[in-house]
Image 1: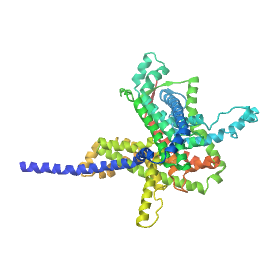
Image 2: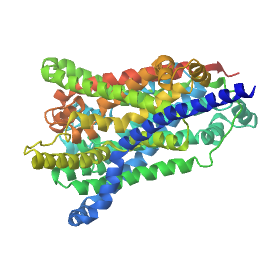
Image 3: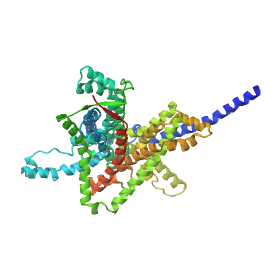
Image 4: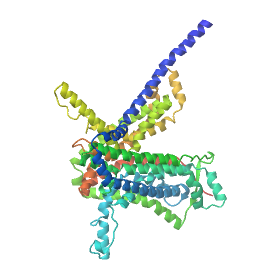
Amino acid sequence: MADLTIPKMRGRSAQRPRSSLRVSGWSLGVLLIALLISTPLLSVLFSALYAGEESTGEVWQHLASTVLPSYIFNSLGLMVGVGLGVLILGVSTAWLVTMCRFPGSRIFEWALLLPLAAPSYLLAYTYTDFLEYYGPVQMGLRTLFGWESANDYWFPNVRSLPGAIVLFSLVLYPYVYMLARVAFQEQSLCTLEASRSLGCNPWRSFRTVALPLARPAIAAGTALALMETLNDFGTVEYFSVPTFTTGIYRTWFGMGERLAATQLASVLLLFIAVLIVLERFSRRQARYYQGSGSQSSVSQFQLRGVRAIAAMLTCTLPIALGLLLPAALLAWMTLTNWQKSLNREFLELASHSLVLAGVTAGLGIVLALILAYGARLQPGPGVRFGVQVAALGYAVPGAVIAVGILVPVGRLDNAIAHLADQWLGISTGLLLSGTVAALVFAYLVRFLAIAISTVQAGLTKIRPTLDDASRCLGNTPTQTLTQIHAPLLSGSLLTAAVLVFVDVMKELPATMVIRPFNFDTLAVRVFQYASDERLVDAAAPALAILVVGIVPVILLSYRITRSRRYTDAD
């Protein structure tokens, strides 16, 4: 019996190293991908520290004494204004469609997400043309009241800091709306009914019970909106509101000061870090637990009369101003000038954007699948940290990522050119800087977090027993992934690809900095046309970006709407 037992134990021990090696191979892949994705961030931090040893002191002192205060003031002003705007719009509409019933409330549930498809710079160009002195609004006012010039009346200046705050709020409030609505839906019905039984009216129940319980979700949505605000380039540049993103672009290309631009990028990165810390701190003690027995349905208040009309107007206004009116204006300009807009150049721009978005989406889901599955195989602290680092790029503005890529890539190109000239006697030029490969890498750094979160959400729905069963049948982790997990994750992978695809189509700051010569995209050309006041020429590319962006937003809102069932209040 001893002879039979010992070989059996040896067989088990012999299998463990092979399994451990396979798992460590996945974890090594996760760490290598995380290191690659974090290279731009590390480059910015290192260059900012190393810049002190080079001749950038005078340039930085000039920036600090002239434009840096305006960058800080405008960035803080945007954060405060947009934060208040998205809180008011997002929380109010989320509470209305979740806890109240009024005409059209079921439609508003998903329609309130649609403005998320419109990039803020599209609204900036459209509303400027619509509200300027020679636009239809002011011309109609002059005709109606007999005014002859701007001295006879006052009209707000759209191209200003307040105008940018309003446009950002109209586009970014869906971040707060989406998360706040989910938080309101998941709140225990017993908790809200208890507040009503204690004599609280709907407003008091919202203020004292529902709002504090939803605070973590609201803080997360507000942080996302503010990160997108700091990342913007097109709107603030067109409105002549100097911020860090515009300063980075002007310092790099206008002044030719690479290290000074890196220092500005590091300051902007500090803003993002403070924002993340504040968001985490706001949720530090926000641990609310609610019973699960009463979360299957949400009791709604029936609104009638004036209250119903007010609720309808509250929900209609952000949709109309954030999507419907700009889309209608762009469609009208495109159709009235279709022979000039829908030309060969438009098709070429569209092909560039589609190729970049398609390649990035394909690579993104592959990398996200490796990261998420590696974390599933070996959920240790090192692997979890690697996945978190790889997902950090979404919080970093595109301008910072662009600078973080161009600095090391430029040094690598110079080193290759020097070696080629020294050893082979040939000039290689710039092999990587300003190429499609560098641009795709920037997109991956920026948007890989979206694919990771989507794939991880899909993997959590797959029971670990399927992994065990597959391993018992002799399949390796790779075979388990390709034969079992990949088919089950087809929906999540498609969703991740679509989300990354659309974000790449809209991305402007990184594209403006890294794009190759004579390789413009729809977003870049829209910005160039708008900067030259050729808004009619910009209409077709802008409308194309808007149409592409609406598709995933509709799918997302449809899935959210189907995820909950409602019951009438007694």
